[in-house]
Length: 152
Image (cartoon, rainbow, N blue to C red):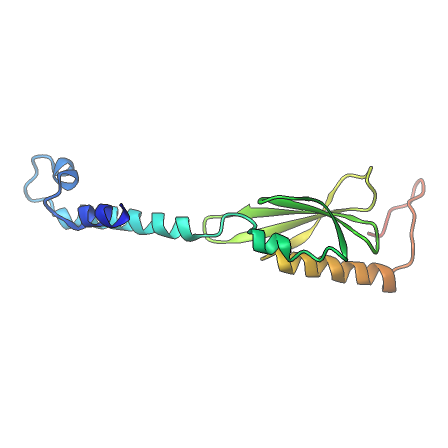
């Protein structure tokens, strides 16, 4: 099907091209063919682009390190077994690239706050692990009290 539509685009005598020409004999038909060809190539590119988390990526989540609360094709919600913090990773798509937005909360009842962005799910998981290492090794326990600001 794709090859047939490509051949249709490249054929200057195709009915699709001739119907767009109208009665203007001095219009160059290959200029119109170029638009159809570029549109076809853009469709192929968009079909091959990764549009969500793959099953392979989801299976590589370290289940010994994380409690997986929800794992879907567009977002993953995890709880770190070390710090008990909750993490929500959302797959974002843009016209030319993809990104993973990482959100974080300390307790179940808290609301999420933005933690950062990474290019892949693997990089996001590594960022979470490094944050946990910082929390466990380099940060004193700090509770919010009335009138004071949290340092995290």
